[in-house]
Amino acid sequence: LAIAPTQLQNEQVSLSASQQHYLRRVLRLQTGDRIILLNGQGQAWLAALQEGATATILEPYILQTELPLDVSLILALPKNGFDDVVRACTELGVSCMIPVISDRSLLKPSPQKLERWRRIATEAAEQSERQTIPPILEPIPFAKSLASSPDARSFIAVARGTWPHLLTAVAADSSPSAIQIAIGPEGGWSAAEVEMAIATGFQPVTLGSRILRAITAPIVALSLVTGVLES
Ligand code: SAM
Image 1 (tube, rainbow, N blue to C red):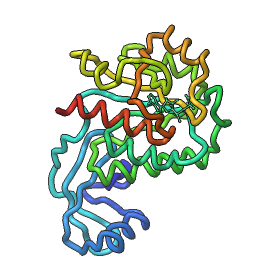
Image 2 (image 1 turned 180 degrees about the vertical axis):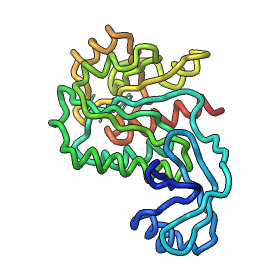
Image 3 (image 1 turned 90 degrees about the horizontal axis):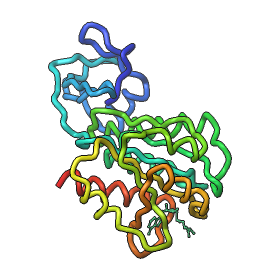
Image 4 (image 1 turned 135 degrees about the vertical axis):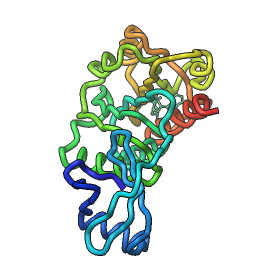
């Protein structure tokens, strides 16, 4: 369960109504049952559920569930289905998601949508026992995102053309400090966007011979990268 600093006082954690509902009604836990608490920034504790709305911290809990290096995704916002992208990519270990407005994607999403995606990322991080909750940044224009992580090994997934496979490209680089991958919207990247990304140091890559949906591609890209990093 992810907790905010304000919920923790003297080894006692006050649980919100939705957290109590999740623990008692969804997971069917009872008083005395053990739960893992995460602060979303790398710390975790084993705690015991108490009567009412509290849990007591018992001891620090060592979790080692993060990828060995940061893998972030630059994601042109699809029309639908971004909830699933956020959920699956969080489970797969993404370190940061940067939604971008591209030539062929929609207008900026509402603050409510962003809040919803952040809530989904928190729930997915809880369920997959991650040490950190990946941030979902405010949407920015694609051009601006290209400069967001200058030290990372950067890839842009391009659906058509003859490009090296992402798997081979990641495996060929023995020690990148971080990785970032840009995935386009339903209509794909414009030629100008691909050129701009290449000029900024992004390597164009394929994810295979078939054209994947905009909401499938980030999940596949992340699965390929985690396969290389964790095997
Ligand atoms: N009609 C678009 C085109 O021709 O580019 C297809 C776009 S695809 C539905 C959405 C995005 O997923 C693409 O911009 C790309 O980033 C990624 N993608 C999908 N399939 C891919 C593949 N086989 N290789 C590389 N990227 C892929």
